[in-house]
Amino acid sequence: MAVVFSREIEDHNKITSGAHTEIFFAATMLAQKMHAPNLKLQLGGSVPLCNVADVDIVELPMTSTGYDLIRYAESVHDHPDTFLFYGAPGREKYYEEGSDLQHVNHFWFADKFFVGGIQADRWGNTNMIGLGTKDKMTFRGPGTIGINDIAVGVRDTYVFLTAHDKRRLVEDVDFISHPGKKICRENKFFGDGPKWMVTPKCIFDFDPETLHARLAKLFPGVTIDEVKENTGFQVMVADHIEEVAPPSRDELDVLRAEVDKTGVLRH
Image 1 (cartoon, one colour):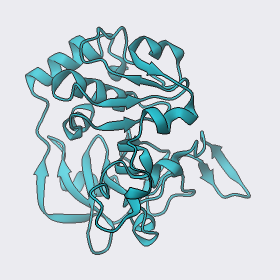
Image 2: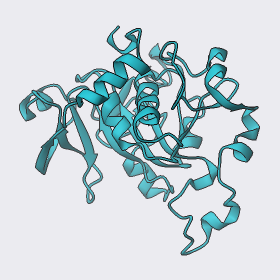
Image 3: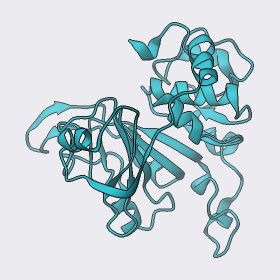
Image 4: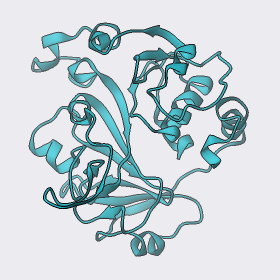
């Protein structure tokens, strides 16, 4: 999954992260070392802008809020200064009809955001709030932590789950912390909702007509039937299913020897 996300990252991209996304950190740092040395990674806490293209990584970070990440920072600043140091100075030009900034860093924020959740549903909505109802919550998650602001201000978002089963991939999430494709399209958010939902078994994109999650790619060794049997909503299947190319030797070498030397992703 880290390699798949790394391949999606382009040089000079501006990327922001959640609090606990080791897969995403690995993807970003792998991209910086292999093909995107000029990308900007914004992490939480003290808000350092990290670049590890030519830096020895002590250990893959497990949280974006740790101050030890300052060791990888090009600059460190307070959160309100994000819009001065991180976003592009497009201001009102983003909203002008025909502007060449219409598809770049909307709302002065980022090109890509990777978001996880307790649940995800057929529309790409994710839930980090909890399970149950507002009157009786059976499990409480970390909450929305500002993700809705990111949802409307990032060009491409990617939903990822670290397990693929019917408890996590559901018909409708109990709560929405990050709006999916349907909500973003109906409300005309510039971000337009998630591009993909990625699990350890497959990649879903979204049908352009129904905006329903659609099986588009399988990881090696996984079958369509296996995805259907472990998904809690009816699986729509694309006309042509691709198999995700496995990691190359170069990708694995850099990931294991330079990005994740202590094996955080394997734990």
